[in-house]
Image 1 (tube, one colour):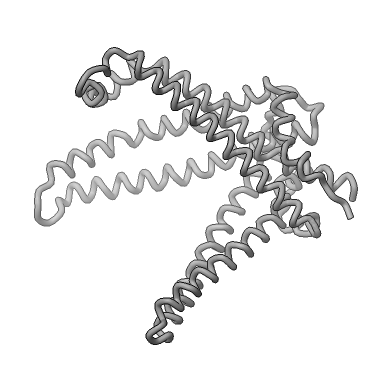
Image 2: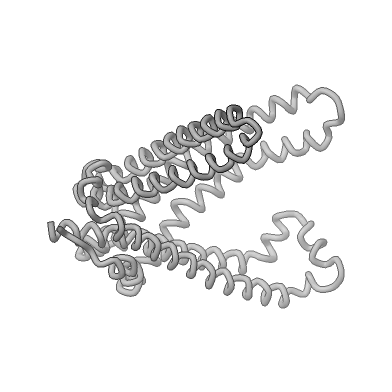
Length: 312
């Protein structure tokens, strides 16, 4: 039976970062252009509507809601819903492009031009896969949660004096079992993304065959990935906190009693004018760190897929 080395696969993302640091920088730039800028544009697009809504809410007194305010709320909510849907689809595409770049660095290291970034059929199939996986996950979680609620309610009603305690036990047990089953299914389907990329075709349930007998190895790899990401976030978070404290100590305008409150109560434009060097620096570092996290997360799956298909 084909196997893959758990430790080697779990740490393969760090190898990609070390071998291709300039590519990681390109992925960070792609994240800024592809996700952050559209989010800021959308915020400015809907910002006036929400500012108007807040103003109406503040002027609204007791009694029945003002029809004008309700109309404004409906329009703002509709705009936000449409923007969320568009941004979800767009972010799935951007994530597929970045994921494809990481997969390409592992599976096709010779295609290093343009930081491994491409917009091709492989990325479009990955986008479709991500959308389908998210929709299926939401449906499954909703159905499972509904079944657990119904089962708990039935036990609580029919359990007599001990119904509440029995219902709590049943709910906890059913949730644990459901979570375990869903994690197992997710692991068995976890190589769908590298399969879709490598085959340049939609692959989902085909992963079930490839991962047969690999459940524990995939679980171990996943646990290591989660540990690595948590440790990285803790270290970077501590460093960022220290930098913020140092920055606060260097700003004369926030020293003294009540100075911080007065500083933050100023108009947003004034705050951005004073803080833009720090905001720009932290944004750049955050983009690079996010690109590193994407690499650490996605590379192991491509490495596992490569090992299993080469030995098959």
